[in-house]
Amino acid sequence: MELRHIDIANLSVSATNMRAKGAKPDIANILPSIRARGVLVPLIVRAQSEGERFEIVAGKRRYYAALAVAEESGEGEPLPCAVIAAGDDAAALEASLIENVARLDPDEVTRWESFARLVRDGRSPEDIALTFGLTDLQVKRTLALGNLLPRIRSLYRKSEVDAATVRHLTLASKARQQQWLGLFDDPQAYCPTGHQLKAWLFGGASIPVSAALFDLADYEGDVVADLLGDERYFADSASFWAAQTSAIEAKAESYREAGWREVVVLPTGEGFQSWEHERCPKRRGGKVFLTVSARGEVTVHEGYVSRREARALEKGDAVEKSVRPEISSPIANYVDLHRHAAVRADLVGHPSIALRLMVAHAIVGSPLWTVRVEAQHPVSPAIGESVSDCPSEARFDEKRRAVLSMLGFDAETPTVTRGYDGEHGLAGLFARLLQLPDPALLDVAAIVMGETLQAGSVLIELLGGLLGTDMAKAWTADDTLLDMIRDREVLGAVLRDVAGGTVARANDSETGKVKRRIIRDCLTGTGRAKVEGWVPKWMTFPPTTYTTRGGVPTVTRAAEVAGLSAVPEPLRQAA
Image (cartoon, rainbow, N blue to C red):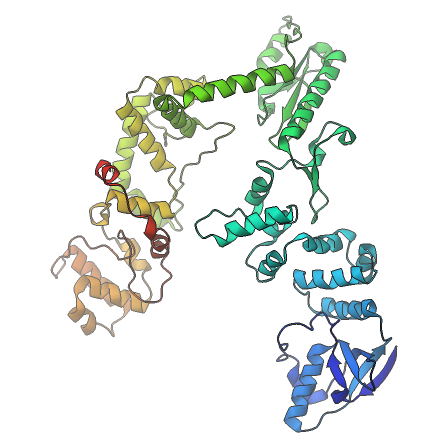
């Protein structure tokens, strides 16, 4: 490498410079230094084929700053340069990358473009990792972006899709990526992202290869690699479960042959509750429990008995030795799936029973149902107190208590949802709901839906319009809201809304404290004509704003579903 000063007129930016593409770089932070002291750090350049011209491999911002100074002064000083060998594009690109990465990490797509060019020029991922002080995995993760369609890389570069989404898309075929882009471009379609995308790609829970109990060498199904990580996944869950089920049965059989009293394979997704069991060695009658997660992982719990069995052992009672099951787990699985298929085919002909079963699932939950109660998280104690004391909450709680009584739940149970603790769980509640007439069942469903309805969602906007919710009947202005209105323009608009334009104009220059007092006086009738039924524009159905600035969540959500407001007349009358 040769150090020399080169006339600025003989320099240009090389195509191998990782920042060669795009707009003129931002030089604002280095321009004052270049003006005062010139270019002190040499540019990295290499000779072009013709004459005395050189191309800049690294130092593009210093070059543009020197050009700016030259234009200001009318003359340009030769720039210090480190001249590298001509013709070696990989070395030039490495020089550009090393300098830029050390100074400021480029975006990941730019890094991929540069790494990919190094690979084309003969560098291995291991060479690249060694050169830039990265791990092999970091380089491979960057190179994996090459598995993406160019448009997806562009969306990632512009931060329109996140890293988790991109990572999962590297698992997909080009055709599958094209399908995803179709959903991304369709404003009416649901486009899966993040972890939901992985479920979309695999048709359910993604199953890592590490979960397999069987020998992968004997597996005939397809496996896909997570190109951004070091994990691989089964492409076909049905093929995996067929092989895994046989392997689980073989593992259970090996424990039986080893002399364990009983081997229990718990249903898929059901956890082993350690607090319901106690340790017990094999010689004293301990059992083996196998749990299988939804992702296929198998966990073995050796040497346990239930607490009831432990108490019997402490008393010296004989523990009955288990008898080998009449049918194996694969046969049991075969029987279960065929019975399931037959029952659900019959269920579709009995919607009234299905509705009761759905309500039971919503209340109790199941391994396939996760239902959560809306916690109504207030951001301050004052807001929490205001909501808990409002007439709407009192009305809902009254109806909830009636449903609790009708179902035979504890009257102090805070919610109907998750409130059943009967001996037979979901089946016990379902049997109870079968005894209810349809009107009573619908009362239960309405309470459960109310408890699990998400606050601050677009559904609130749809339902408020459908039900004709009148906030003037459901809400009364309180100090909690008025004290939170601090914006001068908004407070003036609220004053005008409540007290009228004349009063608002007369008090335009007054403090917020004065304006809030006038609003309170109007709403309470203290010294002023009482204003009945006032509701802030943000709370009405549909909501509106007081200013043109926007930023009102209720208005934004209402706009999202404005086209969905048409409701068939029979349903509107029923509502």
